Amino acid sequence: MTMRPLVIAGALIVGATVGALAQAAPQESEERVCQTRADELKITEEMRDTYMRECLAGERVDRRKAETK
Image (tube, helix red, strand yellow):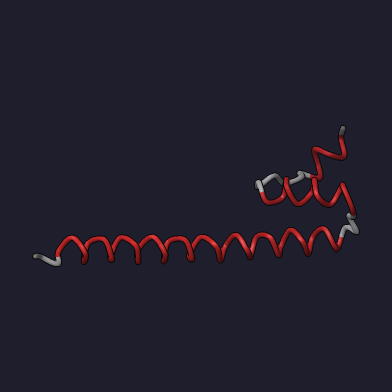
């Protein structure tokens, strides 16, 4: 019985795990940035939930456009 399929499966599992860990770190960092910004803006309750969801989705406010509306 050859070990090759087991070695390949093991390599795929390790690769997937490392990839998942690499993606988790930037997401946690982005979440901290959004939380810090929400704290600075004193956003609370439902507005904070909305802000966090939009911030984590990558939406950013362009202050110049917001001021002209």
